Image (cartoon, rainbow, N blue to C red; front, side, top):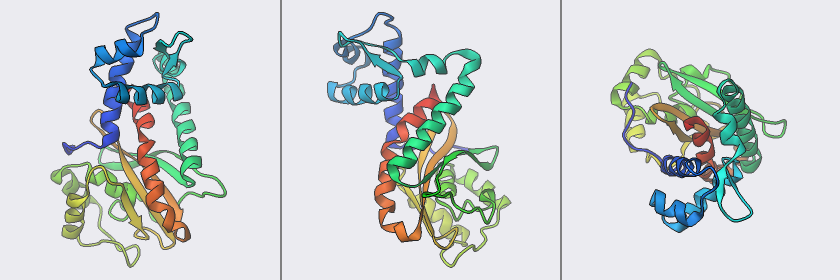
Length: 252
């Protein structure tokens, strides 16, 4: 399986955030914003945005004198046997926060060993998850999650998946022509959310954005009842803007 060379905007934010965290961790007694800007090469405006996000997620902490030290979340994620539990708890809290922020059920998925795997989700009675009436693993061609994952693969990776999973018609909107599907994936800009407008299930619309960590392929997605379709693009943009903390958790 090959990964496409493009990366989304949140990827670059995560890369810079990791650079900032490394610089903070190198100063046990704290480091000023001015010194961080000099050490990381990041302009003050961009650095301030990253520091705000890192403090909000408890990866960094600002002391009373204005300097920055490593935060509690980073300590927990780096603490050996507790790391897996801490990561799971942090991801679930993040997904729950995303659910409440976008007003929709949200999902974290990855493409592993040639198959889709939903690794976490957050829903509620008011924001129910999609009814999985057809196994998601067999429906990548019809879901926002699936198309987002396939879109991160190279041509051979996509062809390999489609050779194992038939592009079945699930609704009247489902793309079943393999060539048309591949062309659609090729035209999808990497920074624009992938949409599913009742292609998987009548009455449901979805959106997904890439979530990358190293060589892994993943995505964040949301689903809404079709009567809330007017909120889909705005919710998808919000989801994309909030993807960096999830990617950061996976990358640490």
